[in-house]
Image (cartoon, rainbow, N blue to C red; front, side):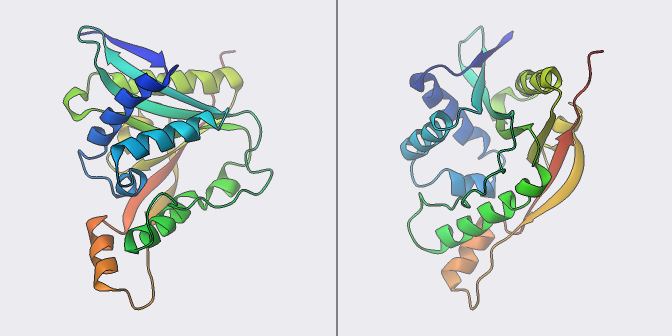
Length: 221
């Protein structure tokens, strides 16, 4: 069954993308996504859409099965033609979560994920923020379509591309020319943690291990 790549153009399509995102990042379990998704799918969808609309560097892609018309995967690429860290940015927190252990942990995990970006990504570059495929449609080429869009763009602009990857997804990125430049070890700690904090930290799978991968532009000359 053939697949088709699309660039996101309207809010209604993003609702379908977000539904797939929830399924994909739950199979297998992803602790960072548990923080990101918040307390409801509706709020998560609206929040991610607002993030996208507020950043002109953002492009959301999605893939459909042409036979059924179903959305089966999605990806968000950022194309930074200038250094996004030229002006210091406030650190993002899990502001969408109510105060409590989950927010405490979320704030620290987000900080762990993003803290190396200003030093590592201080030149114009592309960044994959999300890339996911519904668990029932994996190994059909959907991820490759979405990754090729970004790597072609990176080559066209002569820019490096980055992704912060889980252990499971690392091989997929490596097949598209990415290579490891650093490890991620994301965790959350407080002094004298409550039972609730410790239980939530364990539920989220902390410490969460991952990889920072980079891809160099390939010249067409």
